[in-house]
Image (tube, rainbow, N blue to C red):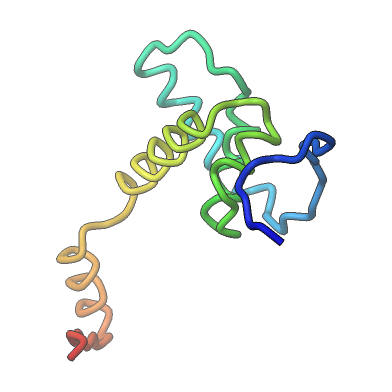
Length: 119
């Protein structure tokens, strides 16, 4: 038997549904971040609504879904899903506290922090 990367003549794409356990709050938060960002940059539209984009990105981030698979199942290109992923990671990163400030806050509250490097 010869191994090949070519599709057979009778193959077809299969799209299936699966359960993605996410809270509505998480999806709404990400979708709202995207909506605000789109308003700020005065973007007129995206091929899919912000809520759908949020679910796609969360599937990629949380369940390590392949970009090509998510793209094919949603009729967009792989590069579009990659761009959405990178854009939403950037929006989330802006909200994250800086490490020095987070450590100072923990110290003020009486907590201890141990930082180590891998050998």
